[in-house]
Amino acid sequence: MTGLRELKKQRTRQALVEAAIGLFEERGYEQVTVAEIAEAAEVSTRTFFLHFQAKEDVLFANADVRVDLGLRAVAERTDGEGPADVVARAMAEMIGNTWESDLSSGLARLRALLAATAPALQARLLQRYVAAQHELTLALRQAYPDELDPIGAAALVGAAVGAVSAATLAALERGDPPAEVRAAMRRAMDLVAGAQLGREPVTR
Image 1 (tube, one colour):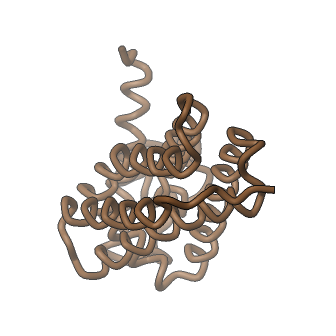
Image 2 (cartoon, helix red, strand yellow):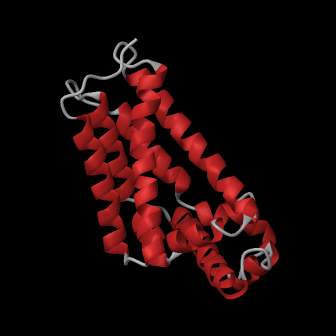
C-alpha cells in the first residue's frame, strides 16, 4: 500500500509534468524555464529539482520506470523461456504500464513533437534510447550466457525496441488516439516476435 508521503510525492511529480506539458504546448520548449514550471505547479524551484535533474527530464518522467519493468521481466525469466520470448514479454510489460499515462496525458505526443524540433531534446532522447537498449542487452546477455553472444543479445533487443519505437512515432505523427497507439506498439512487437519463430538464437 502506498504511504501518504509517497502519494504526495507522486502527486507533486505529476503536477510538475502537467504544468510542463501545458507551458511547452502554449509557449514552446525553449521559452519555458524551470522556475516557471515550478510556479505553474505551485511548488518551489527546489522541489522541482528534487524530482527532476533538468527541464528536459520532465518529458521522460516515466522512462526509467519502463526500463526497470523490462529489466525485471528479463530477470524473472522462467525455465524453458527462450531469449526471444523474454524480450517479447519485457516489451509487453513496458508497453502495458507507464505508456498509459504518457499517452493519455499527451506527454508522448508532445515529446515526439519537441524532439523533432529541439536539438537539446534530440540529444537527450538519443542518449536515453541508447542507454536503455544497452541495459536491456546486458541483462539479456547475463540471463542467457550460454545461448547468446553480445551481438545476438543486441540484435534481439534492438529489433524489439526499434520496431516499437518506430511504430509509436508513426502512430503519434498520424494523430492516433492512445488506444490505437498502443495497438500499433503491440503490432510492431508481434511482427518482431513472428520473425523470430523457428530461428535459433545467435550463439558464440
